[in-house]
Image (tube, rainbow, N blue to C red):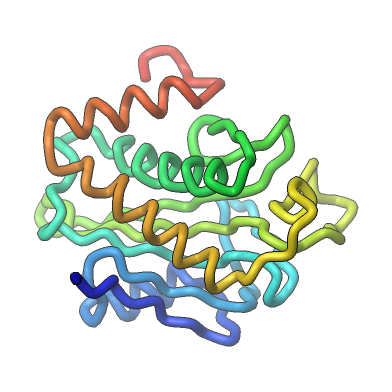
Length: 205
């Protein structure tokens, strides 16, 4: 049986994406850096990500090329498709249907359950690795009033979850979707899935 890539757990950090970047030479493909609390979690643009300590998944997934085949030139959207497929399938496995909002938020009935920040690295024009930071609301139920329409898995299902167990389940889904990068057929599946479940896609994408 193949050994699953490791998950590094931190009590607290400024940013799991920054930690993953710092440790990149030591991390295998599909390794994860996770934290119980994060003080400077980033979203797209200048957005920040709120999370109560220990309540949610705060993690950065590492994709390395090789062993994975990088997306063809100009098709880095495939990496968003890998991550959003994994997240949507994980959430669906917990009995909740969700949608992808262009191009990297996950919503349930218009309420935000997950935010994503994807950062790619290149050397000489060749992509070397991707770090996908994820903030996924698991158990939190008391959100700050200034957050627009947040929701957690617990609020949707009424169940309390073990965050470490849920991260392992999400890692398993990430492994499945990342493998689709390896073939033209798999990349088409990623693209078809994304377009089926994503809304607000701009013209030309």
